[in-house]
View (cartoon, rainbow, N blue to C red):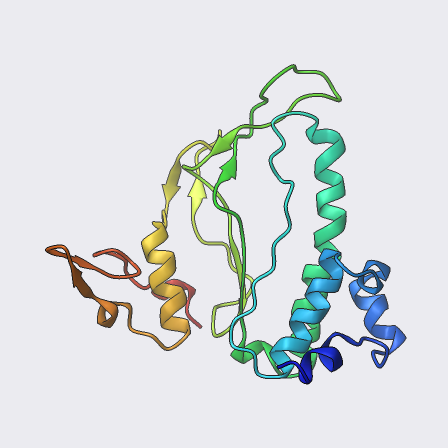
Length: 200
């Protein structure tokens, strides 16, 4: 690893078209765009799991100023990663999961002015998108009510999501059961069903 990491992190051999795809921020160490490009390079070299973080989404106030910056950091780079993996024939065997740990309310929180409002945590409804790895492309699964407060069609429990992700990785989640302190445990607790409608 010590010998291969310097080569992996050296982007001097990447063509200009790569930086046009990911954005100029990919030239700067520590940016989300740079991390997406490095993620593609890791996948190319056979790394089996890659995780990226982008902090700062907790806009309880000042959402009008902060959210556009977050989106500018992530939108182009995320789309570029998908496109780059597909161009290189890696997307079919790479499952990309993009999401957070909860959603946000659609109604305002805090002082409600054009510049200062925010949105609160909302664990009842939130969005995750998947790409590649044998999932159906271009579909929306699940639906909320008109206030985006409750799921009203095709709700997905986190255990179902995990069961589906494990299935796409070739792992039967029911075979991961182990007994501990008199109780059965597994990565999907003792529930979880594969969401067949998401599988291509």
